[in-house]
Length: 147
Image (tube, rainbow, N blue to C red; front, top):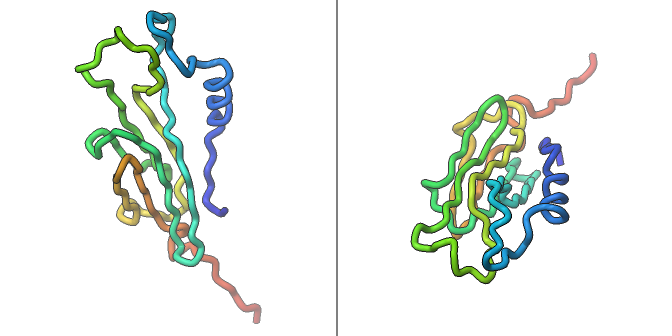
């Protein structure tokens, strides 16, 4: 894949989150973990060479488009937002509490030459779809003949 995607701490974060991090189940009355959780929504990145398009799919269950921000800066696309717990639920009374709430952020590098107006995004059924060109037309390789 020619799209450069690099998040150096992602694999370490996932490893420690699963191995040493927060317990998957919170037992009723167990309030030992009060630290804020940093969320990283899962992402699929797909490249279509024929159409010259890259599609990034982010899992954002239960969020509305008002809860999500997409910013482009210095050739990087950043998806941020916050998943909030409903105010109608209280902390007490849970036997199992697996859903995570808090702020999230994912960043990926855009191909060189991609402009903001070439990026499209939609949120449907908890999946954010972001599409952008694989390479800008002016940066496509050209063959030069030697005279």
